Image (cartoon, rainbow, N blue to C red; front, side, top):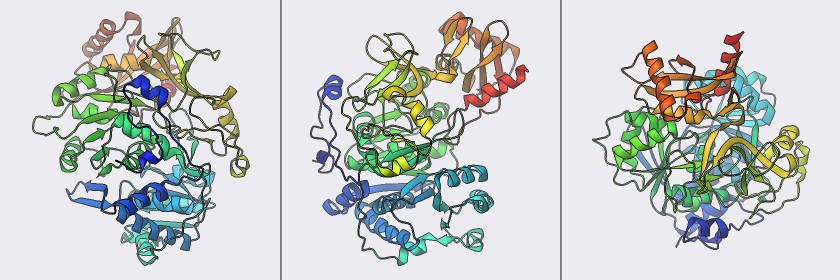
Length: 578
């Protein structure tokens, strides 16, 4: 029996989704610390238990045990203290999927410092904004030749940044810039570490929101976040003790917390890692063959590319569970992947602000295109503009009430008030607020309810269906049209590789549906293809939902986390109208 998870979940087995939703409980200690209470406990109980299985584009495979993780993170924690990093200090990590990212995240938790993961795609402007608004004291980065010039450009404008440390500092530019060789500092540090005293309610992690509708906000999590991801890992991804789980994501994205560290290690799974410099479908498929994960979770974009590949020569027999989150998965992609591999894809939904909010949990049959049913940690409701619960079939704002089931109250600590925050009730997996932005936090939590801004409807079986962000819903001649339904219809056509549906201004109808389409190989833009796609949408949805404007584009604008920036497309639509 997994001795770790049983300490926090008094009951782990359930007969049905209804049993799970009604009776799942998570005990949250006052002083929970993931690095100490999970990683180091595994090292004590089972030192040789596999923690990490890592590969890259060269084909090499490396394995790390929990004993090794404890040893390295103890040394890294001491190295951080020597650099003057202490409890409450803010450290940014831009480490791709190097093994050091797991070491450093654990080390920061051990000393009580606040971690800000960042993606290697950040520009100088992004870095300056993040470092200044978050008061970053130390930046730890890979020696990426494209990233280092961006850091050098931003550094003079980062007011609180004291040190830049580099993993792989043999890079000449890094050495010439006087950056700290962090591996060398870790190597010479003591492996005898004394834990800092931390409380569950204290800050642990900040994710910058993806910025699909504006400047990124700082999503603040405390030390309860890992416990919230037990539901994510065990009951949706269905990870297995002593088996490999692979979630494909950069360490700078919130999906990393969802699939590559917290819930997986609490449940005893080994984290599979494919550390690639650039996504190529063939490379992803080869990495899956090397890592042989029992459970797999990749973004919808990867599935869209994989179904275009010849999969006949690949073995998928070792995979027992496949899941997807981050963006909705169209039914056509689901059906094609199942036909090619025999594997069903189980959708989940959540945000940087939460652990999994809704999913096709282990007891539920798949309804292609649906995100499944609500998770038990949150009192998830669909609310209309007046704050009333929507009837089945009506679109509402996915919302969490602060007084929901299984939530525990925390007094507002001084550090939170000092940052201009408001006090919130908390649940493991639920964010504490938008750091240093009292007004945005208060707006999101208006009336004691957190409105996610994501719109969905519920069918008669209790399944939830994503419609779009509140700003993305198209209002055409009195109709409300969800972009995802139109996108799903377009994805059924063989010519469409990717698409984004947005509102374009129209003097007669107010707004009309516009489709921005990236064509698959072998197809070229034409008036004939435009009409064919429009008629196809009319047939599979409804005549009023078809895209009156079709634009063929080489690529879609995306956030650094890979999500389509519909707000940017809408801005271009409005500009073209002028």
